[in-house]
Length: 204
Image 1 (cartoon, rainbow, N blue to C red):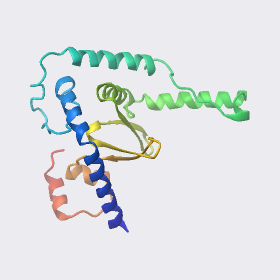
Image 2: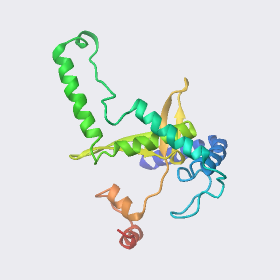
Image 3: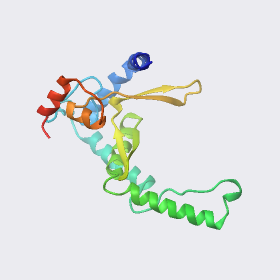
């Protein structure tokens, strides 16, 4: 059963990669000229490697940074509570329900803007991706007993599937982990000796 599910996921991933081949060409060109640090759709760049050789001036990059800051301050200002929670139906105008939802909203914002959640930085990256490529992905995870965690997922790692009316109903993320990160991500799992040896050699 597990093997068939893996094969199904691999087959679906292959379909996603084939379907977006033309987008990869376009997005790589945008990345090279506007935001070289944001995407590796066709070309992988190692950390510290030169990435701006195709940039002839910084106009587009500066405009992207300013637009990102403007959108963030307009839609998700860090100093304001930009989201409300409301009841539905008969509870919509209930005073006690309103007070409870206001307290819940305040708690949500305290957690969201805590250092552990790292929302603010990832929100900026999400907006930047949306403006640059026309799409962005924000992943919300839970670190049990500690905090929510927000993470912007780079578009080159993200693959989408749509239903019959064009709504996204499938999502794949293709990314790499070091052996050490793999063991951390799946504690208690059994790994081959090769992976365990590689983890021992990975710098902390």
